[in-house]
Image (cartoon, rainbow, N blue to C red; front, side, top):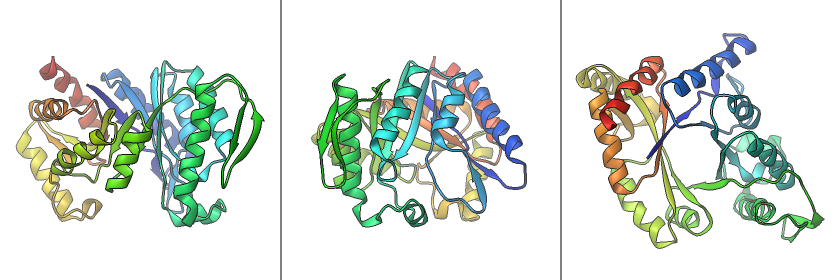
Amino acid sequence: MKVGYAIDAFQPLTSDATTAGDAVVSGAETAGERGFDYVECPDHHISEDRRFFQHLPTASRLSATFDHVAVMCLLPLYDPVYLAERLGTLDCFVDQLDMWCAVGGHEPAFEALNVPLEDRAELFNEHLSVIESFAATDDPVSFDGTHVSLDDVSINPRPDPRVCIGGIAKPAVERAGRRGDAWIVSVRETDADLERKLEWFTDAGGGDVILRRDALIRESADDAAADVDALIEDGYRGWDDPAGRILHGDPATVADRLERYESLGVDDVVVSPIDEGADETVDRFDDVWDYLD
């Protein structure tokens, strides 16, 4: 099983942009030094209260540290030819490229980019089909859809990513099984949700399973549990119970959880260290690997 590191792409406005960018890069470099297998860069648009470091340029910068990168792409928001070209370039810089994709739903982003929110499902399917077409052949690509029309279009270099599709509702999970190489399990899903929905995914075709988890590791499992309880009490993510959503404990406990996920059929776990003590969490993964070995 691989363990990926999700960058903290949101940075406060209290620091200047260069300092914030340095923090993103240094955090990922530390994760690479601590043995994380790859890095994931999220996708978001229109931020007023925080800086957001965009996925493709950030992933390109981090390809100097990781030879496996994942980029989330909210497919309805992008011209598929434009996106395929940029993914093709990024693919040249790494040994493995994962294209994480989802429909999105942040209304201000759709409005600002002049994309009809009500068309997002159709746009997702057409844009994914176009990108897959470029990956499948060296010949010019033609496509005739409701929203996209191409007539013998060529791009070079071409992307050949692992297509990883996020989904929570049953139709979305089944779409990941039908159309993707992997299903991305939302950080909001509990362990019980994971076990129940794995059957949906497998029945629809299956593939790799990528589990997202917030993470908090302390020297003592009791200290980690107390920290998580305090976070939940303060309204963390609006959850009233961590219910397996937060990967927490001492290194031995975290290693046990990872092994349990692997036994369920999870191929990758991508962790987002929680802000409170994120550096400690990343550092203590050094000890987690020892237990897994």
